[in-house]
Amino acid sequence: MNASSQSEKVDAIVVGAGLAGLTATALLAKSGVRVVALEATGAIGGSARTDVRGDFSLNLGPHALYRSGAGRAIYRELDIEVRGKLPPARGLALFDGALTKLPLGPWSTLTSGLLSFGGKIELGRLMSRLLSIDPEEHHETTVGQWLDENVRDRQLQQLIEALARLTSYANAPARQSAGAFFRQLKLANEAGVLYLDGGWQTLVDQLANRARKDGASIRTRAKVVALTRQERHWRAQLDNGQSYRADNVLITTSVGPAKRLIETAGTVVPDAWQHQKPVRAACLDLGLDSLPRPANRFVLGIDQPVYLSVHSASADLAPPGGAMIHVAKYLPPDTSSAPADDEAELESLLDLAQPGWREQVCERRYLPHITVANALDCADSGGIPGRPSHDSTRLRGVFVAGDWVGPEGVLSDASLASAKAAALAVMERRTISAAA
Ligand SMILES: Cc1cc2nc3c(=O)[nH]c(=O)nc-3n(C[C@H](O)[C@H](O)[C@H](O)COP(=O)(O)OP(=O)(O)OC[C@H]3O[C@@H](n4cnc5c(N)ncnc54)[C@H](O)[C@@H]3O)c2cc1C
Image 1 (cartoon, rainbow, N blue to C red):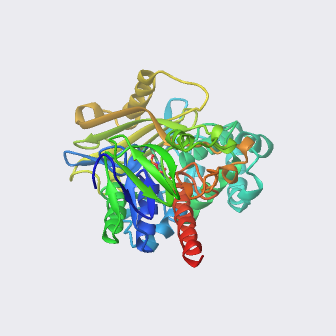
Image 2: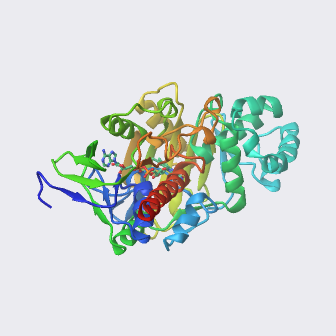
Image 3: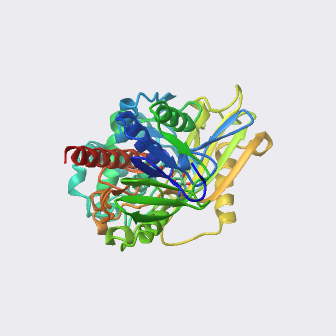
């Protein structure tokens, strides 16, 4: 293509090459659509990238794949191999500055120091009830409201709040939709999660290879800065002066760049896009020479919003004898803390669970304020069903996908489910125009 003036014509342009963009690209290419994916940065994968440092594979913070989530079926459809292992369903609870057993099954509940006798009885009754709740009836109730109405024991309430953080990263009981939490809890209980061998980059690379094999083009350092209507087509303008034309555009960026792009197309940003609150975390990712306390593989904070997990104990992410640990703090949406204080809090959790860890550090990366998901599913906006839909841009042939879009899944499951919905919408438009 002539760099400056001409623009290449394709059937569909995908903006962004994270999981949503690559999934949409692979699905479109598989069905014969001529598609180009344009990624602003020098690397594909977005939040699902894995950095290889020495012999350690570091995801961007702790990533766990829900085995029965919406994404899994789409990976299958695209012949993407999901290779990983289930972490054990046991661990420790951090409460009042000390570690005790996390009460997740009958035996650990009995022997855990976390709950009083009354709290244990209440938990026993609650567990089967929690799993039989219909999430769809609770999208407009907050987690906090549900707990106030249904759970008496304060420590048990805190345990359930910790499970809500664990399954969705949201540290917002006064805002998070209980329906969103119950959906995740059901998924976790149905089939659990996988830590992936080699990290999430294995999914990213397979999706890209699959798309390329079916004829898609994936370009990096290709930031889309404007969308304009040119005759019957959309023109995606890149920051280097190049452009592409297509009948269909799928924007798979986070909500901020998506807003800016549809504004350049001359439309008003839909109301449902305006009130999105990101879910954020502070993450400390570590590669250790050896693990000081091999038994302490998983810790969940009950009265502190923190998490520690030795991902390499389940998945292939570290050299033999070494360990890859993710430690994280779930950041609340409405208040802020100093990154150095958050880091110190994560280090003191490590001191408690893995004393002597400092002498074993080979790789260390601190991400003080990373966006985990673009949208907290708030009860006051209707929870997951209240998210913007893939066709909410008000522009013909322009769709959106990502973890803030569509009525299905949270985190990467939402990215994949909305990517599929947007790709199907493009295919449908093509079928209609071919028939006309
Ligand atoms: C710490 C952490 C922990 C997580 N844990 C889990 C977990 O346990 N389970 C789970 O399922 N998910 C988890 N996630 C979430 C998961 O990683 C994301 O939901 C998913 O990767 C998002 O993919 P995406 O394609 O929707 O968006 P992104 O990954 O944000 O991709 C968007 C892409 O668009 C590009 N872009 C932006 N603007 C432009 C432009 N103008 N032109 C071209 N390209 C552009 C960006 O560079 C980026 O590559 C976690 C995320 C984090 C950060």
